[in-house]
Image 1: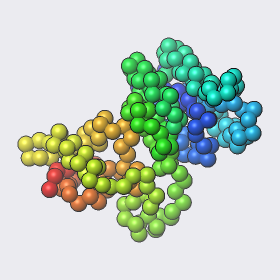
Image 2: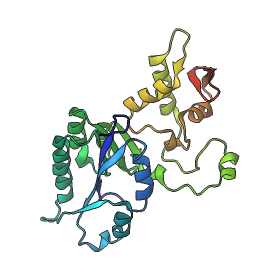
Image 3: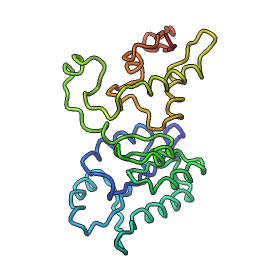
Image 4: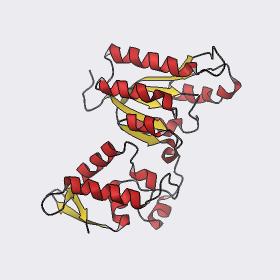
Length: 248
């Protein structure tokens, strides 16, 4: 039996609402959060538009589930995914779900799975409606998972930014969110532990991710804003530092 430090995940992919171009990067991202025990993708594979998935499914051992569109204008794929998700939930064989879709129809499913104590990660495009994003514990934009072809020298020249491509801009709304979260966590001297800050930001906004703003980690994002102080405290281990931040 796998340990709880390596959660078992059911990965359910809506082929009608997700492009196949970034599946490799998507599965690598999912691996950060657990082991994909189930990998299923739902769609009508008789359609010519589904032909591009064939090589991707074979390469990554994803099980295709055929779902015919029985009625014009109705999405049978959603129903099939929801039924399978509940079957998997009651089997007791997973610790969480990864729902890959940009469709708000999965909002209630994500909510129900979380009510059952499941970890729910959503992955979709930037166009994903806010209700589905909010229903997930964490939501990741596909746009930030696109292959990064920059050399190490290019990245170094740009500082800490991972890429010039971003899905969000650093604005006053983000600054207010970080400031208020620091105030929620601050000790008597105004310092907040960076790890706790990141967790709180994610609870407030499941789609929060430094990569949305072009940064690989939280610390470079905080430093780039220039409205916060950073204190990197030694722990006695040269490879580990405790990072605290406070409002200037």
